[in-house]
Image (cartoon, rainbow, N blue to C red; front, top):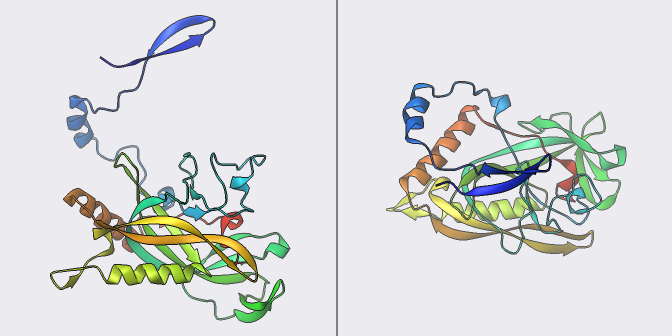
Length: 266
């Protein structure tokens, strides 16, 4: 029998059946016959959201901001568009990497209001390296329109929840995040079986956050450690399918959010 919940409507108490997550037997045949109907397969309708490490200045950490995310604080992990509370950075998430790419992301400088513009496959030929007006020890690749372009590395994969469910996400890493990304890639390249290098989706990693400090200030970045191999063929195939979806362009990543990007970006 399904469990029950009690709700009050117009001062009358009514019993409501809670949604049962089990799949009724009749659905298996009907879903097979009607597979894909009413669902868009267009890439622009299947944008994969991004994961961010929240910083002290991120509006998601400000309880007075309309963008506040439950439990968010500096160093938390934000699964954008999930509707879930922020993840404690000391606990982290389990991640199955499936695809990797690099782009040059165009930004409006913070001094001009800030904001994401778009992505370029390569660094635009008209970009010129100029000193950062806010940091004399840093340079930016600057376009004639005043915008900057930043090389960004993307790790695409699945966040694995405690109940075993998996959701696709993209992790952008720019500026100081490049060091983390390269170290992670070194771990991936070291994964071998029978003398063959394993594809990235054959393995799992725990992603936590750690604090870093330099002359410019203090911020949080990723901390990646090995979490072993996938345990089922279904998990392996899931990763291979996501790799193919991004390689073919049938799935793409969502736009970025300036307010929670690496503080060295702009």
